[in-house]
Length: 289
Length: 273
Image 1 (tube, rainbow over the protein chains, first blue to last red):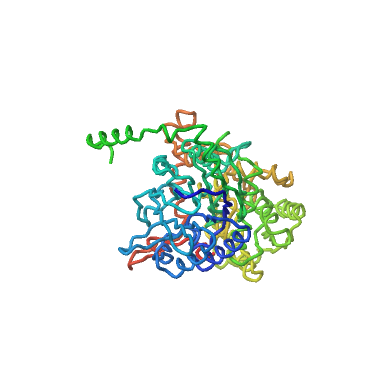
Image 2 (image 1 turned 120 degrees about the horizontal axis):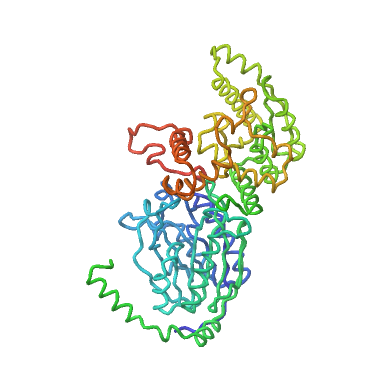
């Protein structure tokens, strides 16, 4: 285990241009420059920050291989700051994945392919994208990291998978659209539900949770921002607004991880074997797939 | 009625932001709209005035000689209260030429001609002023098909399209539109003495209570009848919504090629914006 040090993270709440990778790359470069100026160790962009979200047939036009010049350019930007951002990855066998890519020290360190693709209501991801199949934690100079893309975090087993791999920081990136304005006297319900889920993740798993959601409009659908950092004790430590593009800087401290795990040592006491046996038994009975 | 209740401040900010974002994204800074003297166009104009500044909202009153005098007066009241410029374009000559040329003696037909003449005026202003046409159709009208295709239903963007009429009233109160506009009975004013609620045979309040449950909450006819709506009303409204589907979409194309517009050539309008 590497020595954990406190660091500053930049939550880059952007408003990507739909289908224009070049302009979005410029947005990235500007934000990265700014974050480097603030001596941030990490900058996190929203889901599909390089492409925009409601892609439909644009999926095939904006997709990139891992050796694409744009990906290589982002890698070069990661000298001096770690970067997490989202785009469409085209695999060797021409599947199209909604991915979150982590860059560090001038190279692409890790790619998470979104596992749970929402395909209901206004969501059409399953029609265009292929599903990821893994939740792999990875080691960085900032600690052990697990990455989730939007809908992934609504499946509790996703964060649990990272909990079992002893991650320190959970990075959740999103293009969360508003779905229904609240009644009189109430706040937007999707933002509230998201908050509960993110705070619960921190609470259940004693990890620091970084959440970066985009803003802006795509054909009348508004993305509601609200990017935030939830510390390992479940406290919201920094939060962006719901309308404008914004860079929010938050401080992440490994001592918070230590204290949370002393106060509530659920990871030490967790018995995953009980769950493993259950899943095994249910699988034999044909009740889980 | 809780399903129709809105956080008015949040909804107002949301729709103002929508107009600002979707107009400026396309390189425009102005909108044009028809100001009828009614509540819908007044509310649309109010959102746009907040979003773009009053001087960037170009309003047009387009009376015909048979239009109610109060319509023009109320349009002036609205324009004054919002501080937006209002130009009067009389459509009598154009409508009468079409009436004669087409030998149209049908009240609905003539109403459609008036509504489409206004659309032509707005799209010419859209060209000459380099401004987007701002829509004013609310969700109740769109669902019921209570509008004229390629006329009042035509626009570049429409901040009212997902607001029931009941919600239009609530936001108009919130935003402080002139009393005269809020209190008068809704009318398309396409013929003398026309009133929406007389023509429809029910009030907006009644139909909105039904629609929000039928559409937004996906309730079945049986559930709705059990909760006190008459079966006749429920079935009639569901049929209206179904029969008006054609009005809410682009013309259908026969799929000949590998990729067909609207079927498997799928892009959103904000493509590249």
